[in-house]
Picture 1 (tube, rainbow, N blue to C red):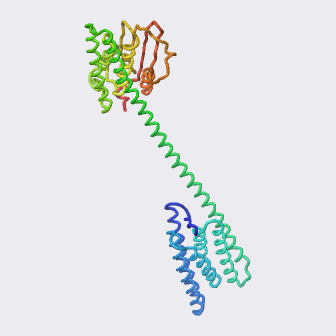
Picture 2 (cartoon, one colour):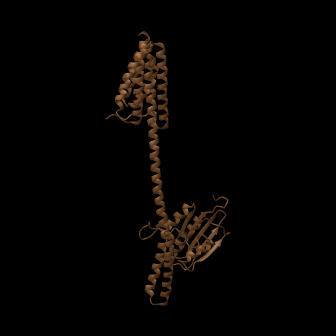
Picture 3 (cartoon, rainbow, N blue to C red):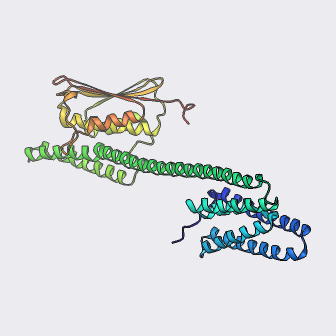
Length: 392
C-alpha cells in the first residue's frame, strides 16, 4: 500500500509554504527556460524546452495528487525525478529549480525513500553543474551535495519540532478533556451532596418528627392528648409536603426570599420545637439569599435534633448581627451528647451535623458544636457578611 504523503508542516503554515514552494518552482522554471533559450541554438532548445514542459506537467500532477492524497501519485513522482534528472544534466541552467524538487520529495515521501529522493535530486544537480564546468570544477559537485545535506538536516529539525508541537497540542487537548470530565464529575458530586442536604434538612427531619408524633398518638389513644399529637403530625406532614414540592421545583422555602430573617428562622424552628425562644442581637440588615438559605437549613436541622433527641425543657435561638458577619446560636438544656462519638452517616441517620458544617464552610463560615452528656448542647454558626459595596 502506498504511504500517504505528509505535508511540510501542519495547518495554515503548511498551506502557505507549499504555495511559496510551488510559485518559486514556476518562476525559476520560466527564468531558467528563458536563460537557456537565449544562450543556446534553436536545435538544442527544442529538446530542452520539451523536457522542461514535461517536468512542469509531472510536477503539477504530482503536487496536486500528493496534496489531495488521491490516485497513484508514486509513479508520477518517480517519473518526475527521472525527467528532472535528465533535464538538469542536459540543461544545467535549470539547476536552481532543484530546491523546489527537493521540498516536493520530502513532502510526499516518508522515511528512507525521502532521503533517497532528496539525494537523487542533489546528485543529479551536481552532475549537471559539473558537466557545465566541463568536468573540471569540483566545487560544482560538492556544492549541491552539501546543500542537500544542509537542507535535509534543516527539514528534519523542522519535522521533529512539528512532531513535538503536535504531541504537546494533543497532550493539552487530552488534559483539557480530562479536566472537563473531572469538573463534570465534581459538579455532579456537589449537586448530589447539595440535594442530600436539602432532603435531610426538610423531608427527612419532617418525616422523623411526624413519625414520633404518630407513635405517641398510638400509645396514648384515645386520650385527648392523642388528638393534639395527631394534629401536630398532620401539620408537619403538610409542611413537609410543601417543602418536598419546593425542592422538586427548585423553589425557595417559605419566607426565605422576603420578610425579616428572624421571622423565617422562628417559623422554621417552631415546626419542631414550638416553645423555642427567639432573640436578635445587633442591628438587623439585609442578608444575601445564599446566607439566608444556609441559616434556615441549619435552624431546621438543629431544631429537629432538639425535638427528636434532646428531651429539653428550654431551648433558644439567637440571631446576631456583627459588623462583618451574621451568627446563629441554637441552645438546649437537654440530654447532650459527645460530639467526638457521633457515628458516621449511614442509612440510620447521622447526616445532620455533617450537612450543617458543609453548608456553613462552603460560604466561608465556621460551625462549632459544644455538648456534654447531660448538660445540653450549643450549636453556633458564623457566616461572613459583606457590605453592599463589597458585593460584586
